[in-house]
Image 1 (cartoon, rainbow, N blue to C red):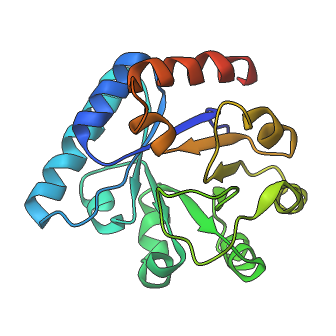
Image 2: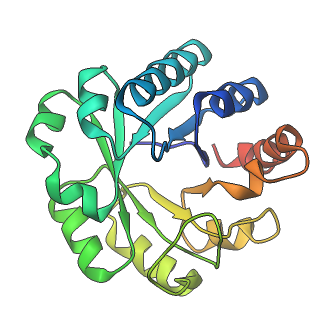
Length: 201
């Protein structure tokens, strides 16, 4: 499986639409706290927007809706992984990404046949709450050695200024939240990231 080097994690379909207009080709929809119907509508709209733009669309956590709505990709954290019907996901042809923070997490993800692995957080970040201290580049290199060709996604505190070091340590892809969405000009920041990562395709 190949993966785009730039992965935006976005909280609603309005953000998805804005970032697709910039040329982003890999997007995860990470909706927290929405009621079922609102969540369903957000997934459907984001999925359709991505399809029209030729972008890969990933549903975070909500694997049942991903199945029901015909999505192709789902990403699960360790808590959601425990209750997921992986056989149903596989039977439907969905690819599976898994978040990891510990060696045990990684062992589990590999044993389950995850299609791609995320290591988090690489650096300190305020975008998500993590139980672990920043992993750093050394841990990223260790993960790279164990993945046997699976894509490795780095997330947490990644900026344009440290991205080259993250890629050099073995990441295939950098996942971003606040560095784009909280930038003074998110569209410009997204385009800067695209310019910085296209040579890695």
